[in-house]
Length: 231
Image (cartoon, rainbow, N blue to C red; front, side, top):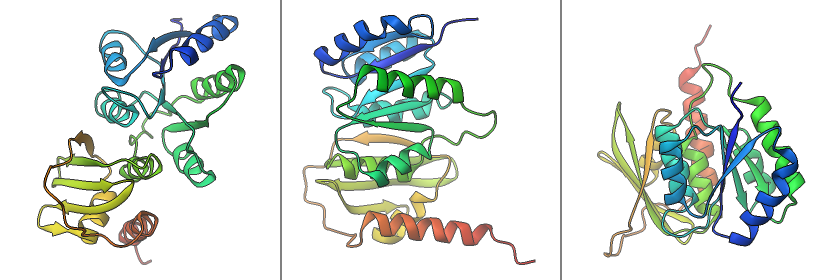
């Protein structure tokens, strides 16, 4: 049976060196590959069989969100662990309900190893994987306080965009829908591909004035109600 290979992605050479040395005692359980940014990680994913991705979010060139978007699109059955110093109990709960797990910095090598072994053992049940949800991506953008343009594509829906400014969901567009209506529509999409684009130079007017949490709750409520069949 082929050894599981875990891809560790972090721009801190000190951290990756520490993990590489510490994980020698786990070499009978998994092998590791190291990348120091999302671009290096994507190159490894293209050329090697990777069982699990462990990534930081703040990195140069292509950050963790860009890497997760790539993994969702091209390696949807590969589970991920997110490392971040910005975790909150609610974020942790949200990420762990998806195909990802979350570990808050700082952590010890043994703590991360236990999380890795748990993820490898759990795997992804056949037929149950829907990929990282749009709601999870949005919450990570908010958590990281990013300014970005998030493009959402789906075979069954018009192309849409979320615009974040300093971690706040500022505006959304999906086909003819704008603002809150567009955001709620896109949050419900299950088969979406997500790409991160450079924010436009022009000033974008604010089209959303409610919290991301409220939008996600409303989108999920509408979605649940649409699946309900009155007996």
